[in-house]
Length: 121
Image 1: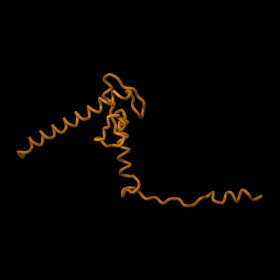
Image 2 (image 1 turned 180 degrees about the vertical axis):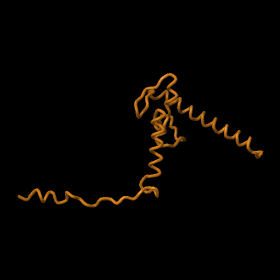
Image 3 (image 1 turned 90 degrees about the vertical axis):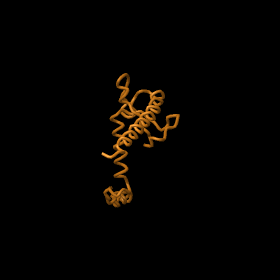
Image 4 (image 1 turned 90 degrees about the horizontal axis):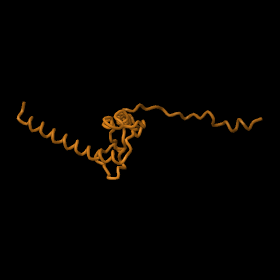
């Protein structure tokens, strides 16, 4: 192994600790501001299970942490994972994506002449 490996490991630990501290800061604030209920499935959390309640950033920007909590919502682990999977799918398969299948849009309107047909006796 190279001599930079211990330095890289130390830097990784420092970055991980910094991220944990940042997350715990806004998580603690969100838990004080909002009821301990998942914003999607409405399950209530307390005691040991409170650790299953996470803070979701509505705009998906983890650096956007306004003090009023307007970019946060509490979600359980399952709903949080689902929300991020939906966001990823939308980014990957959304309109304008090269991965999105192009489907011809219907142009025929079967009811276009309906008003005229109903007037006939």
